[in-house]
Length: 250
Image (spheres, rainbow, N blue to C red):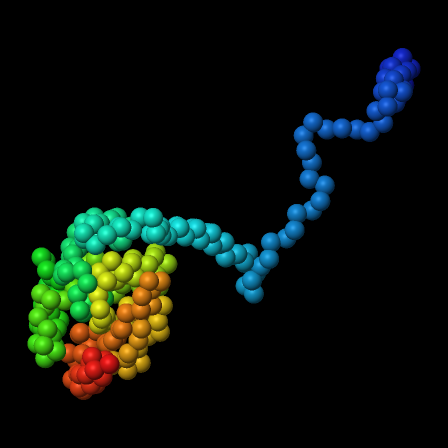
């Protein structure tokens, strides 16, 4: 038996729809969001299994800025240099243990500059095998160690130092300033890594003659391989001796 529609109910529904249409609402809205687009299918490998996408590599951390030694932080005279050399944190990332001070008088006839202290050094610079070689060379030159100004480019023995990073830090400026304060008549450099610090190229021969230029004056410079390299290469010693004779005869 058919149940006829209630005319009053139909009239109520029609009236409600007409009211909402007159109010400007002519679409059906849902409270919950609905996905209308079909999600893309995940890629599969040759076996029909979902491919694993490689994990995104994390962003590399930003490199910390290198703390550079400014000219305003450098000592004003030679007497103040040694205490500053032993205590200045920027010279070696705050590490002050094992540092060795330079020695000798200001205005010495010869300043000897090496790359770094020896591993055996504790109280004085070059107290190991390198120092014994230097003493033998100075004796051949007719000079006593006490008469020279002896210094190093680095404050302590540092295995495999990063010389490029040291240049960025401003160690070259420190070395040049140190030479200016010591004010020697001549400069003897042992170690090829020192030359780039003070604006020269690496030495290709056991001994090369150069000039160390400053604003006030020019200092004659003889650059040689490091003392350790000279011990390993006996043939380099006669080359250095001839260069010394040529250098001092000028």
